[in-house]
Length: 136
Image (cartoon, rainbow, N blue to C red; front, side):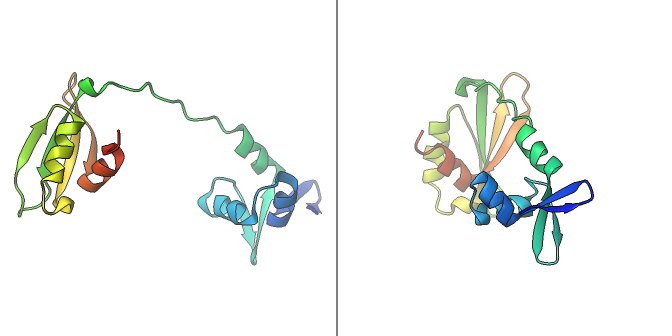
């Protein structure tokens, strides 16, 4: 049951679990991560009604339109003095082939470069690049 202090209503994790039907474990994770604004008093978390409203009224991030692979080029490069090679690729498939030929993946990164502006839009560790695009 929520606690009333003057005109302030405080909800505990147990209260939110009952009202929203969300597991207590998930609620505590949301509170620790700051997804729901809360205060910890002693060992218990408390959430105001306003914080709950903020969570549910939070605007969803805008999705950016998916860009075509042909809008980018990729630069595979060593990240330390042991590996100084750099290769430019036109497709993700080429990058994956190069990375799969390397003995030590952790020594490489991939720069994703916008063809129209020549700006680096992202730098990805080789392992992350493989994980992200190997099955696409």
